[in-house]
Image (spheres, rainbow, N blue to C red):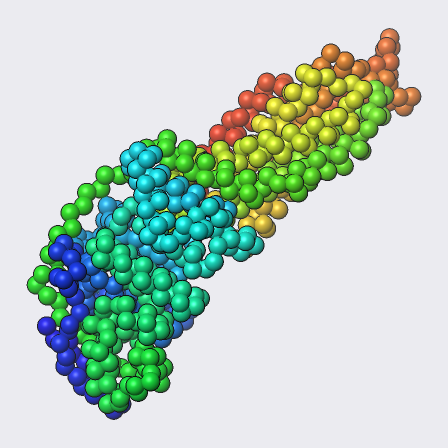
Length: 615
């Protein structure tokens, strides 16, 4: 088969050459072809025009070989790999004539577990050790027994040469961990868990020294021989040693395919004929290829690889059997993984000190509460302080929950590691113990300081229960907000507006009868109003030693001015005065209903947020 090079400028020659890339039977007897024809992609510009970023790329790759995709920065390497792996950004559109055949199969959900994709940036869990990360991936992506999964993990640790760092935190960012080369090998090992037939690697050697880059490419080359994989690997400017590891080369320039064929001497001969120049003997060939592209010596060059009759032929036989493990096991694994991460990042000394300090500062204000009429408003303020803690802290704890996980979540969903619902349920369950610890620490210190005279075990436990319910309601509301707002830049602004509304219509600042009638519904639908009423009722009414309050000389309560008054104000009269007399059971029931509503709405918004990845 021949490929034709169009001449579009005086600086290049018109060349016809044999297309020598493709299947090498000496490496494997079970070849599966990945064929692509006329891959053309465009992206919209602010001016309304469209820019072509892939211009009719055709060719094929086979199992048992490693293909390098090279070219200058911005030539379309990442877009090319994303198109092959069905991971294009929604802003990029593919032409209708573009076709991809995976061993004779069009793209389908069943292929997700047959195609591994290594991102250019390392997408992994910094808070886990190497072995933990691989084991969690194996529990999600592999069916079978615990022993089989452990065996697969140990095999990959050995193949990726990760034995020395297997129990070290992966790290990244502010978390100290393993080296960049080791982290890249962890990413590769994660994708190899499910034994894919195809592996697409976006610049796996980026940012690594030449020796580490050689190790990475050597590992990939070994996979083609041992596992019979087809590997396509974009690489910017490899060393001569790294370049020698590749079987085939696809060279791109400004979205056009300039060369497609065998790497090595064949590619050098081609570029020499094309440019009518000699590659200096002391030059690294990829550097010389790149130099020609950067100096516009390849401008307008575009090869045309004819579409063969066997384009849709192939030996790949796959069936979509759904997920590797059950809904329950997906939920359990993701919960355990989230909890391990939480223990590393959250449950530390600063976290405990913060919650205790907040509780002490709030409790100091109410030391020595008495039973005079002047102490009633202090109890109102105490209830509002509990509301603030159970409202603000949980919302801020979960607000960025999905944003923090967005890269790893996208990776898992695209690899069909799990369904979105188990992830959603597990993440909320993993936050619940943190909220419980947070609220218990704050409540213990606050209650001890404020109610050492009139407190009781019954009242304390009721406040804890109320804190837990109210805290989870507002955590689910925070999850709702975080899932609904797609732009992270607006997330805090939207949250602040919600917080102002929640506090303003909670019933603390203005009683419901003093609010304009058209706006009173905002109190009725506000979970903060029920939380405030619940805390105030528990503080005033629960326990064996709850006091009546002594009337002041100039009392605000009518009962104190009535004939025959005993000079005491009962808790029910206080609740009626502040219009917070909804029964405790009603408050609990409404709050639990609101929790279920926010939980369901949060998942609906969450699905909308991730749907763009699953198309």
